[in-house]
Length: 482
Image (cartoon, rainbow, N blue to C red; front, side, top):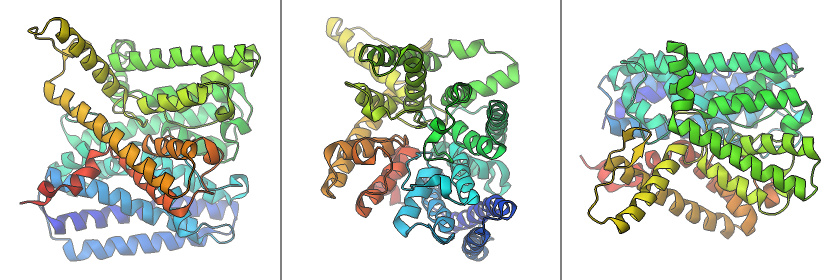
C-alpha cells in the first residue's frame, strides 16, 4: 500500500472537485442571488486542502494496486461529500447545519435523492442548481471522470474503475484501455444529458429547470428544483420524457456503447438483464394500475399515468414523484419499496442490488431445487447463453447476505434513536438502495429525523453507492496485512 501515492491522488481529485463549484458560482452571479461567496469559499477551501495533500507527495509515482483503489474510492467519496457540503453551510439565510449539509451532500453525490430541505422553491437559484449538479457528478462517478482525464493514474486506473463500476461483473471493459473506457462512458452520459435537457425544454420546461432535471434524471438521482418534484409541472409530456430517460439510464451503459458504436438497437432486447428489468416493471405497473382502479383511487387515465410514473421512478431508484404513493391503498407502497431493492441493471446509474444479481439468485435457487430431484446432475447457471462461474455465483450470495445483515443492523440503529419502525425500515432501505423517498415520518422529507439517525443513513448511502464490499473490505484485518 502506497500512502503517499494515495494522498497525492486524493489531492489531485480534490483540486479537480473544487472546479465543479465554479458553475454554481457563475450561476449565482447570473441570477444575482447574492450567494456567490459560498461557492468561492468552497472552491478556496477544497482547492487548498487538495494542494496541501498533493505538494508534499507530488513525486510519489507507483502503479496503483487493487487495495489502493478501494481506499481511494471509499476515502474520496467520503471526503468529496464532506467538502461538497461547504456551500450548503455557507450561503447565508436558510443555510444548513453540519449534519443536514453533509446529509444533503451525500444524498446528492450518491444519487440517493433524500432531502432534509423544505421550501426548495425559495432557495437561491445557484443552490438549487448545485444540488442537481451534485447528482449529475455522482451519477457516473467522479472517480471514473478522474480516471478519464488524469493521466497521472496511468495503468493503475483499473484499480479505481473496478471499485467504482456497479455490479458483479467488474472486469469487462468497453475498450482495451481503461482511460478510453472511462471517456466513452462520459461521452454517452453527457450526450444523454443534453438530449434529456432539450426534450424537457420542448415539453415546456424553462432552460434552468430542464438543465437541473436532466442532471438528476440521467443520474437517476431524484433531486428536483421544486418541493413537488416532477409533479410541480403537471405535464404528461414531461412525465413521459422522464420515464423514458429513467429507463434508458437504468439499462447498462455498455449496451448504450454498443448501440453508439455499431449503430444497432436489437441487442437491447437480446440482453437478459434488460429484458428482465422491462418485464419486471411491466408486471409491477399492471398490478399497481389494477389496484388503483379497483379501489377507486384514480380514474382510468390518471391511474395509468401515476402508476406508470411511480413504478418506474421507484423501481429504478430515481425517486421522482408526481403523487404521494405512500398513501396508496393496500400493499402497493410496500411492494414499490421492495422493487427498489432490485434496482437497475449492472453498469447503470441506478441503485439497488442490481437486476443481474436477482437473476442469479433466482437461477441458483432453481438449480438447488433441480439438484434435489437429480442429486448427481451437473447443472450450470446460465444468463442467456453464457454459463456463470461458480465464483461469481458465490460472490452474489455473499453480497446478498452482507446486504441483508447490514440492512437489519442499521434498521436497529435508526430505531434505537427513537424513530418508529415504518419510518426506520423505509429510510434505511431507501438510503441503502440510493432511492430517496420513504414512508412514515420521512414521507415528505428527512429533516425531522434525529441527527444520529441521519449519520447512520449517510453511512447507508455510502455503502449502497460503493456496493458494500468496497467499504467493508477496509474493516478486515487481512486487508491491512502486508
